[in-house]
Length: 119
Image (cartoon, rainbow, N blue to C red; front, side, top):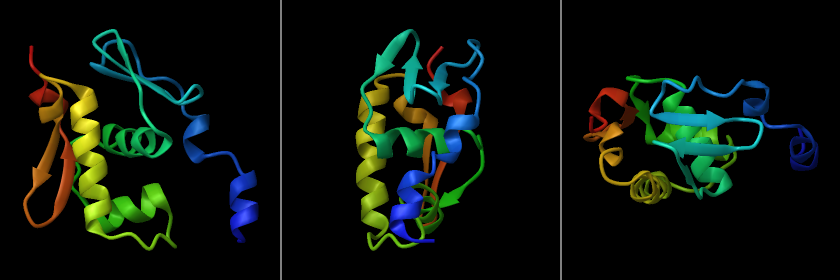
């Protein structure tokens, strides 16, 4: 599939319904927004996709390569540092009490653990 054809297709995440309100991180896939404890986050498209990928698969460990392919696409030329930088920015935007929900799995990648959010 050509890049032009890919750009015409809606992102896969648009068909997903919003997360139930009981979750600390609420994602609205149609509006592509994230809300943490009632505060809407200002995320870039990639940051939203990365957060949605992690939140949609809690406790699952994702390698940097898996995240690159899933979020940036199979033809991405970036490396693991691209993921690391975006994770750091995402943690900053999640803020205190929620940045710990994105867990670094040393020498492997990242996982999302909602139980690590501050009470």
